[in-house]
Length: 66
Image (tube, rainbow, N blue to C red):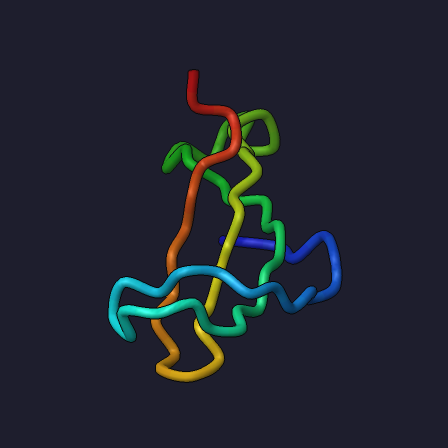
């Protein structure tokens, strides 16, 4: 389950698939990491989601990794 918290923003970033810098749609999503029904609202974490406009490759990066 995920919920988009912001609108998409387009940035130029390096794409591993294309091998060059391409425009990417970037957003932040809250993802529920717990599979338990109890207290699921406390297991949501923000993820940075990037999608290459040219090839469609999508990458997720957890924002709270230490």
